[in-house]
Length: 89
Image 1 (cartoon, rainbow, N blue to C red):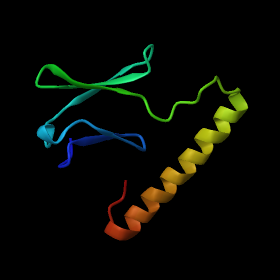
Image 2: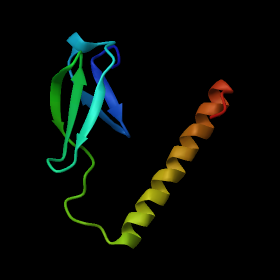
Image 3: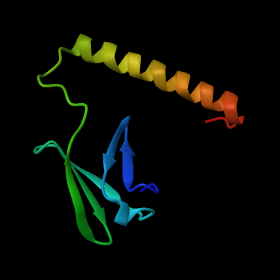
Image 4: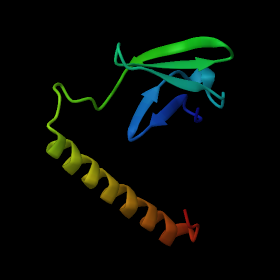
């Protein structure tokens, strides 16, 4: 949990609450309900609807193109980060 009380899952930011800032949490996926369950200190802190879902099933070729594009941008981001910091992933 970062300082403003949010977590990042993939490229999506979920605001949990400033009161939980710095707390170690578990983000558990409830796929059937399309929810992210955030747990801290042994209790459910918040249940959030999943972000970034597609409304319908994707044909495999469309899915493949989307993940290839995503992988490309992740690689670009890591390269940019490496240039800025010198840290290799």
